[in-house]
Image (tube, rainbow, N blue to C red; front, side):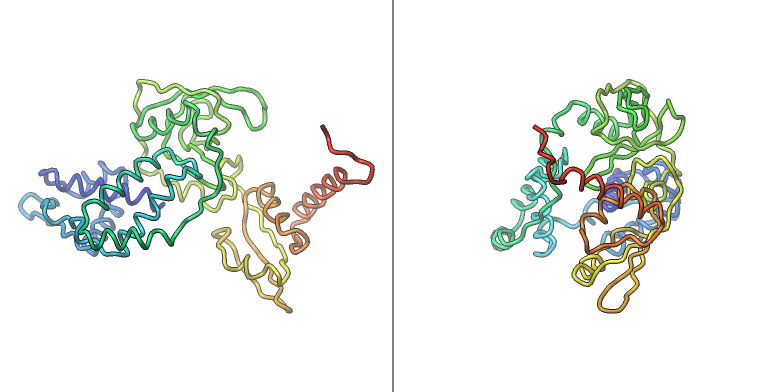
Length: 330
C-alpha cells in the first residue's frame, strides 16, 4: 500500500535523524518490517537524493539533518500533485478522518514556497480535480470511527460490539487493530480478534460500539496486508478459497472493462467483433455479481454454473418487483 510505505519512509527518516546510529535489525524492529524491506527503503531514499550514511565503526546508519530536501527545492509538478490530492480530500467525500490535516499540511508547504512558484501552482490547481467515490458524511461521525483510527495508530487494543455476518446478532470481541483499509467504497479494520483467535476483517459500518483499552499490542512483523487479502473482491470474506469465473462483455463496454484493473488475477481474452472474455479468480460471487449486473445486457456470465444461476436469480427478483400489476411499496 502506497500510503503505508510513505508513512514508513517518513518514520525511517525520523529515526535516522534522531542522532542515534541504527543497524538494519534495529530499523526493521522499529518500523515493524523485515530487514529486506529496510534495505529496499534505504535504497529508495538514496535514489530520491536523500543520502543515508553508513558508520563503519558503529556498524549502523545515520542521516545528517541537512540532507533532507527543503520545500523550496520541490518541483512545480511535485507541489501541484500534493496540493490537488490534499485539497480534494478536504471535500470529505471518501470519509477520510485525517483529511483536514492533509489540507493544512499542503497549505503549510504552499506558503513556504517562492512567490512565483506558489502562484503558478495555485493557478494550475484550479484546472485539476479528483473525484473520490461518494461516502455518506453522517457515517463518519460515530465515535467508534475515531476510536478505531486512534487505537490503530497508538497500537491499543479496543473492545468492539458488532453485527455478525451470519448470526445477525450483536457479538463482542477484543480487537488488536493492525490496519485500516478503504476498499470498494467502504472502510474496514483488520486485526486479531480474541473471539476468533485469528486475524479478521471487520466492516466499520457493522461496528455498533467501541472502547479503547489500556492494554497495548505489538503488530507481528510477519503481518502483510497485501499478502493477507491476496486478490479479494470482498475484504471481509469468510473463505480463503477462490473461484474461477468467466464473463463475456460486448464490444460497447469492452474498452471500459479492459482499461481497468478490476482484479489482480484478471485476464482479458479478445474475441471476434470486439467482444472480450474476462477471467479471474475471485473469493466472492456475491460481490462480483453486482459488478457484472452493472453492465446490464452487455455482460453475460459464462461460468461457473453457480455464478450464472446467481445472476439469473437476481434478475428474476428484479423482474418480480417490476412485473405488471405490482405497485411500488409505500
